[in-house]
Length: 436
Image 1 (spheres, one colour):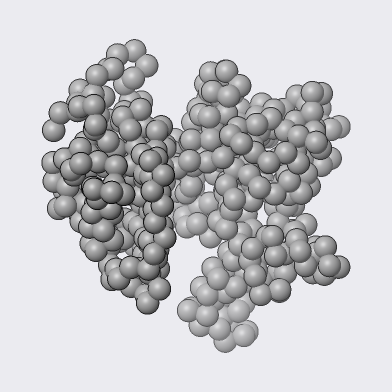
Image 2: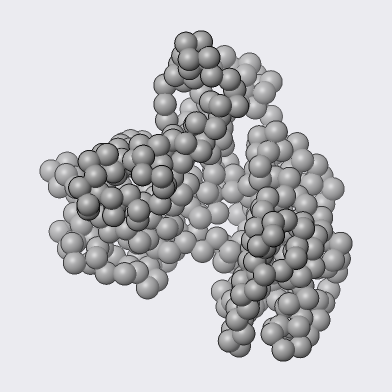
């Protein structure tokens, strides 16, 4: 398929109970239409859709699986009244979000049988995410066979983490034989906001030491040095690291065996506690993991809600300090995602007490911090050595950008030349073998 004036890039994020989508122009920035089919398979399955022409759809639909959801999306995009394209052949390429590529995939790749087999191999590492991601790819390929299909991986940005940072203190055979290591997640978001920070500051990313804080229901922090991820808080699974909405983050692993041996808890109950009953939800005990509800309880004098917020912010501050030490300094601190973008009190607590640390002057400007973000913005004081930024994340745009980069590399789009070639590993998979 050759590009023309109406060519588009469709981004698909297929989950276990939802399919999120965005249709981009060929600049990979202009959103022509976007939406989500959510609560798939349930009675109250909902379609939310809006287009750049002003069409808005919010209605219940009967959708029992990913194939029906993708088919519905295609029908809507080509609808004579509400759609934005005249035919499905205007979709030049699709960018698919995939959570886990393991060690074999270190960047965005054109989907072929080998790539699909690697995604399938990684199901045991991401059993809740990779299966619907793969189904979304296969369904889309059958419905839009003429387009180029590109897989963009959450783990790929973290493929640059060095061995001393990704290995655990376990027998090396557990890494060699069972692939147990730190992989990291939220990589699409971390990469996007790190590059946006460099663009906003008008500095080359290779010259910056950046810490990106993706704080939402799931939370992670990444150290980005010279444009590369060198460490990240999530590990073998998304359970490790920061305290999150319902996930515990870092704990003493002996707690698990203690609960099994002394409290007779079985595997399923412990998994449920660690993933669904811990974090802010478990600490605050107000029946909600939403930080807005927890702050409301705190403001009404709930001591436990106040304690949960302090524990949450303390863990964030510890990771920032650790990563600043790992990089030998810090130039930029970025807050993003639901909490990071929209909760000034959390940013304020996290940035307290850094003023006296030599070479690590993090000073927040209170008035700027309270300003609602409308795109990237600075919230640091003029005397702060470290730039503090709030940058709204846009994972769909990052997926579209990486898809467009592959189109250019394949010479399907014009513009190949200096500065347009993908970085090594960003458009092909590579088989990495552990050193024995």
